[in-house]
Image 1 (cartoon, rainbow, N blue to C red):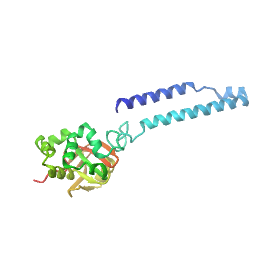
Image 2: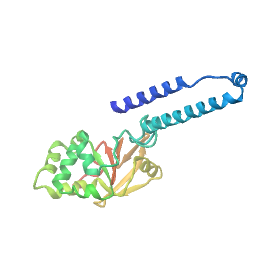
Image 3: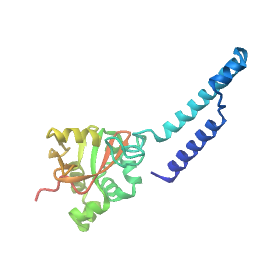
Image 4: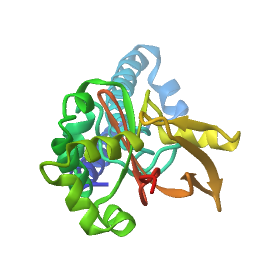
Length: 228
């Protein structure tokens, strides 16, 4: 959870406390003693407090409601710890995320920026470290260099699926032995291994990023490698 979200939650809780402290505490005995005419004023005051409290609680819920950050602020739900997304296309989110700058460079070299901005896709992006550890730093550089456009396209097609699939959806599919076809035509077998979602044996990191045209899923490696 980022600092600004923590600040908003603390601020909202503070407001709730202040409002609650201003609600008058009057027992049913004192109400009867006052008589019904005055009870109308108390009723109006109580209704006002309820309305104010409702607005405050509603605002607090909008800050901490599940699903706004992958699996929610408190880690619940079926998603992971992804950043807020939704209004950015896949390429723009990839480029702005420090974990995926190598992939962004490969997309740029492949000339596929438009595709990753408009087409409905789900991508299995390895993080920078995971990518280098899995295929080697030399291969990463090769895919980013001018003159290697076709290998870059082929690499991306092997880790990209048409359609929108969240981690929750893939987890459900994995439990029934489901699979996906990549743009390259390769199969991604989904399984639950030691309680974790895997794609062709590659562990998913639990981070997902909703975008305007699909999902970015973080992987611990390359889910479909080049055939030797």
